[in-house]
View 1 (cartoon, helix red, strand yellow):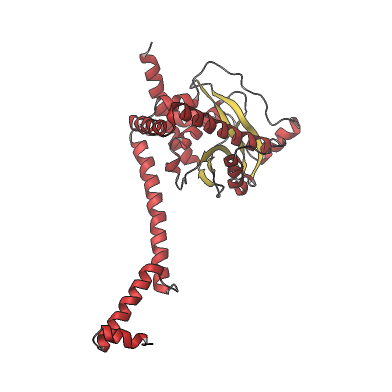
View 2 (cartoon, helix red, strand yellow):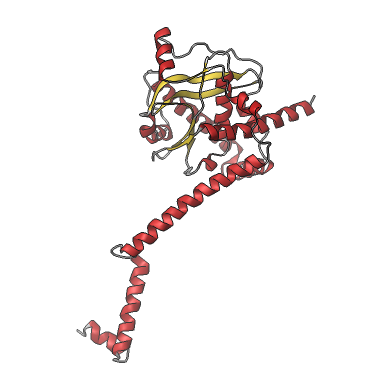
Length: 322
C-alpha cells in the first residue's frame, strides 16, 4: 500500500513546499469543520470579549428602548411621583409584615377592594397599543388562521388562555399554602419547573391575584403578587413564554403593566402599605430556567411615566366617543 506521504508527493509533484501547503490546507479545513481542539489563551480572550460585547449591546438596546419611550412624554413631575407612591402610607417591610401577621394570623389581606365600574389595566394597554404593534398582532393572527383555520385558531387561543390561568393557579396555590394538582398541560408543569429557583426566593405573600384600584386616577386591575423576593418587598408580574426573553425590552408591555399595578397598590385605600420595587418573571414552557428582571424604584418611576401617557391616551379615546 502506498503511504500517505508518497501519495501526497505524487499529487504535489514531489515538492516538499507543496506538501507543506497541502497539510496547512488540511488543517484549515479541519478547523473549519470541527473548530479548535483546545482553546488557546488568545481564543479564550477573544470569546470572553465577544460575550462581554453581546451583553453590553443587549443592555444598550434596553436603555435605548426605554429612552425612546421616555422621550415621547413629559419628564416625571412631582405629581407623577405622588400618583405612583403615596407617602402617607408606610413602606412594606419585615416589621410591617410581622405586625400584619399578628393582627390577622389567618389572613394575608386586610381588605379586598370591591369591584367598581372602572377600566382595567389590561383593557387600557390593549386599547392604546401602537399601530405598529396592532399590525404585527393582526398579521400573526392571519398567518395562524391560514395554518389552522379559524376554528383551529380559536381553539388554540382558548388553550393559551387556559394554560396561562393554570400556571397562575399553580403559583397561587403554592403561595397561599394550598395543595396543587398536577396540570394536564405539559407546558404548565414545565413552567413550574422553570420557576423552581425563583419561587424558592419568594416569601411572605401579602396580595395574591387581588383586585387593586387607583382611587385618584380611576383604574383597576388584578395584581399577580405582592411579596418579598430575597427579603425585598416587590410587586411581581408572572409571564409565560415559549420563546426566550433575554431582555426586559422583549417582554413588551410587562414593565408598564407592573408599574400600573404598583401605583394602584400604593394608592388603594384598602391597603395601608406601599411598595417601590418590582419583578417581571418569565417562565418557559420548555422548562428551562426562568428570566427574572428586577425593577428598581427609579425604573418603576420611569415606566410609570409611560403608563401615565397610555392612561391619558385611553381617556382621550374614550372622550372622543362621547
